[in-house]
Image (tube, rainbow, N blue to C red; front, side, top):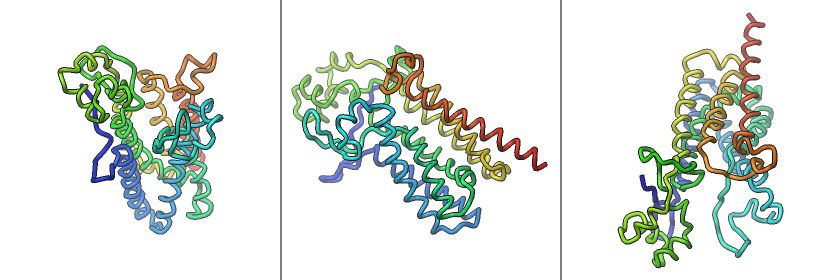
Length: 307
């Protein structure tokens, strides 16, 4: 499969990027799911609006800081102004948009923000909130990974299997490389020429087949989402505080841990001597899985105690 999507939908001078669109879908669907949950719990929709705003901010800021500190601190410690700005100053000033987001950072910030939400807004135990909010979070994870696929980022390692291997043209060639190698001034047209013009077949052959790791992850998250949805709507799991949250931590971060084996290197703590046996994503996922096991056993233990 040859993968060469455009950046997004061009509406006159405005380009709606597919990656940004996937975030909009994720947050929109998340709001709808939580609305249904709040209605079931007889909670005020006004409190949902606050939850939505806080969740958006926590996700974006936490994901950004997670990328900065977990994956690229050696760069950002010398470029502090770029941490929260959509630009790069090195090697020359240019607009980049908000690139570089890490899900582990988003998870940590969401838990912190949900603590304050539970105390200041909804006046419910933290685990009550987390048991419910992880359901839309799981659905959002699906669309974030689809956004990564459209962006040709977080691609997998090389494979010789032509059944599921993907040639990520925009991952292999930078816009500058595509223009230089094809002598076509417009980078989008240069990419399209590499993908479909037989004149540039040698350039296309340079692009290796890689695992579409983003799709593997998104596919698995579909199951995580429906399992959580089933537990909440069809069982009494929501009455056992921490159970759904624990299952979420175990399933989602186990998926992440396994899929990391076919992902390309992303830098970060995996480059520290003695830690190279696992990827950065795997090292960061382990504490979440352990925490999930704890919350599941805690919920079960409390159930036995109450009985």
